[in-house]
Length: 297
Ligand SMILES: [Zn+2]
Image (cartoon, rainbow, N blue to C red; front, side, top):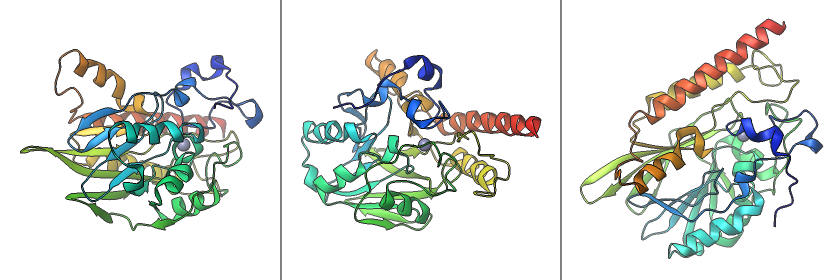
């Protein structure tokens, strides 16, 4: 069931911008229809599947010893994500971990329901875990005053920066990527098909999107916002990266790549320049934002 009213005029040009960007008054905000649009699961590579909606990524990593889900999209789509897991032939009760890019309702809204269905442990950074447990970020979240809260998540634990979990033979490592939120995280692992192993990156949002009253350059509620975001962009740029999926799939051209693969380009999802291109775009947008803030001073 979708409880959202659409005013697509506002959002059409803002598909990349994460929640909260569209209007100062939260009551008038509405979200892209694609965020709620069910998609059939897509095999990405090896043990990795895309199970998200048209407009919000979620990934399933499977093993004989249990599975991992990254991101829950919006609350209304959690049942579709779980149906996609079952549709691929896996038992949702075998989901051992749920990971998150960042604690905004468009990426963590469905996590409470997925956690409840599976009994999984939910892992994040300290700030991310605190926000997940409460169902919203603190005042240092650049979108704090406009963002929609989401269902609070049980069984949330902290994984230290560069820490990892192992599931079967797959090691999944966390990279703290604060800036879009103070607790944002990105995730990397290696997926193999026969002898060919590829480094896969699930990249957090790197956009300097905020409430109208927040300044990325030195807001007292999150003074390091711009420096954090810049460091996170640098970090994503330098990752070993054969396949990248960003929290908003269009950020790294996911559906275009899937389409190209359907049309016969077998390795279309492999994009060794994908992380660099994603980071460079984010850096340009951050610089433009800081320029606008300076011009207003
Ligand atoms: Zn966000």
